Image 1 (tube, one colour):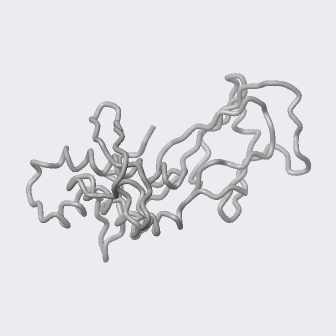
Image 2 (tube, rainbow, N blue to C red):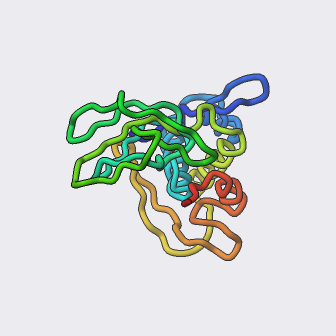
Image 3 (cartoon, helix red, strand yellow):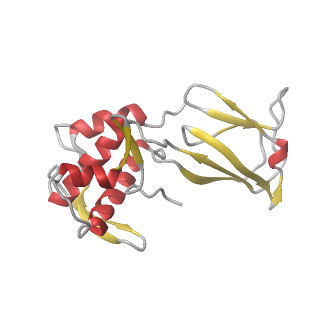
Length: 202
């Protein structure tokens, strides 16, 4: 289930502010008439930033699927928040696992002493919550900046493609990476910020 980027928050001075409130401040919008439209742009921008980072950004529940039972398992998304469930062939084995955190990659394991070799196919599902709440200020600002680019129809030049948010709507946008480091509606300044949050492969 994707995060709701309009409701995602950042710490703003001594206060907490939602991204919807922040984009309205930046666009000098005082009423609620455009809230649905701006929420769409924030959602598309947030999901585009997630795609660029190959990671979740705003805190959300996620599930990984593995064709074999194994241990330890490096979790795909960072930062890890909480382990919700581990099942193997629909049997709940959550109590068999504990979480160990390391810099940038978190693991769940059922054995402290050795790596368990898989002996066959088992459907292993790991449900956990990952992401930031609140978002780091620079990351929230980058998402809002991208949403404004969607709203104003500005971005890099190149091939146009279409992106949809189920149940919300769709928008056509540019997916090219230009010579200035832009990636579609993600400007070079935005991608520079997002690079700090990209998932790394170890």
